[in-house]
Image (cartoon, rainbow, N blue to C red):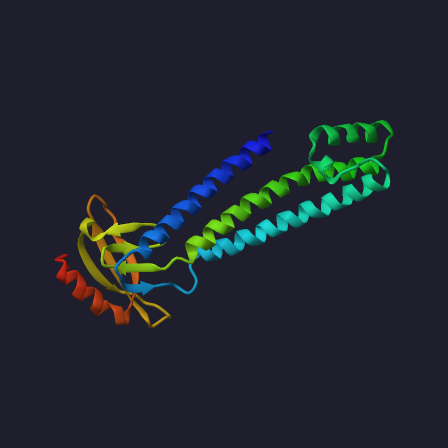
Length: 214
């Protein structure tokens, strides 16, 4: 039963994160129009999503190989009627006791390996949830819009910004040559956005219109 509770917990958290992400995307889609759309070609969310996808696939393969091995062994020995039996703890305990009674050491070894591998199936599902969330978030575009700043992680209205500054950034990519530093009410650390060279003047012009101090 503990597996059921854990899966339910991760499922609820995943649904909430996906809903929050999609709500943010929908909110940004209703804007009058972005000033700038700045999307990195590869960001950390997509990289993490790919990593977790590989881990999910590996976990599933480890489980499936063990599952196939024990199912074939039980089927050949007329010990199983359905694949679903292998998800029943009472069934696997009963089969293991029979193996021990008849000193079937090969069966004990394969069944024990499968019982351990059952956790890999759960892990595979959890990592797949994380993959979906990470990729959805990673595909979002960073926007500097008329109503504020919208990134993968947050939305910030211009009313909360006290001051902004520019900082040149050393970069291999010559297109992204500036950091936009935003001083926000109630925050000690400034928020940093990567800005293309061609967009700097556009942002300066708009922020001066809404009277944000530079």
